[in-house]
Length: 444
Image 1 (spheres, rainbow, N blue to C red):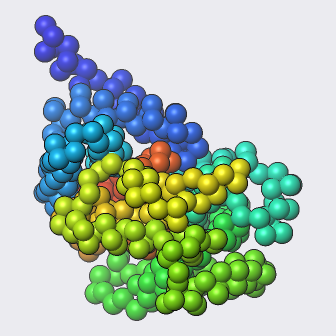
Image 2: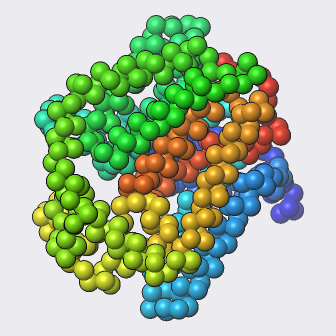
Image 3: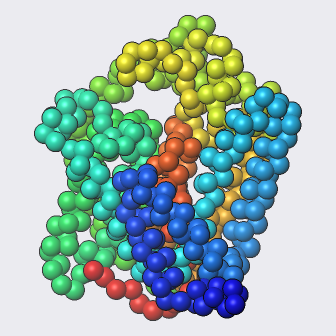
């Protein structure tokens, strides 16, 4: 009786509708409300565990092997770290739980069901959630302060907001044909496209994050090279004129907005120029007073930890535990109240991975990330992925990888939801590449 009921539930339309509602709700709240996004994501996981046995689990070895290998290594590393240092066992378990929740993205990909139109709609819904969050935090005083040089990330942390806004900026650029070639209300869609380009672009400058600027510029150069220099015999895989036009408009827009915001850029680059130029003789015995100096101290601490434990790392306990244990006063910085407190991260995602999981863990993370990137490329070449979605997926992964050189947010809820959503959408088509639909896409 119980088996029959479970079988009926697995094949019921109500379950599929509930999962679809949770999927769109997760997309909308991922960058808007961490509490709501938590509920939506775990509903998706629960429904996946109910539904998947009847429809089949993930069959894509290219993603499952690195995913399973990484998860297995993280479990083993946590167990060994807890055994070696029992008094830190709870810290390592908590750190593992933070890292492990980054591996929920295949569930999101599974519920997207190889449907590219669903992926595009989810991106639109997530962008709406981000814009709503910006509008809720925006007022005349905030805008005036931002134009006068006060850094802002609106409703999110400054540098993290630069990642999120920049990612959706690439979505606006890569999906330009859907706006330019709309069948109805074409000029309204074009106006919306221009408004989104302006809002996201200007908000990036308000962050005044040098890492965001460098990652954005490098990604723009790579994306431009792919659009204009890549040769392919298959006409369906060539960037359309609308796509090429959008990247040219983006470059013109970037030049104009850079000139408009030049005072902010000049101030941001100049205020720490002396520290940057004197890094070769930096005094590590003295506390820092700017972000360049803070990074110098943190990078050195991370490098020392990696050299001490190169293969396996120090274990998944958060960096603040290791920083506090060192007792170095130079690893403190003032909080918003002016009180000195320990840094809770190493200011680089790549260094964090190597510090906690060593070279072995770093290679496993790179294997999974590279598999995601190559899966997109392979599916695109086989005709299972449209050029706009293929370009966006590649640009988003490149941008995130470069951004991660300069900051770390992986254990924070907003980043966790963003990553699971983004990676899930990107992996959706490659995950089911043998089942892709050849149907034509529809515009707005």
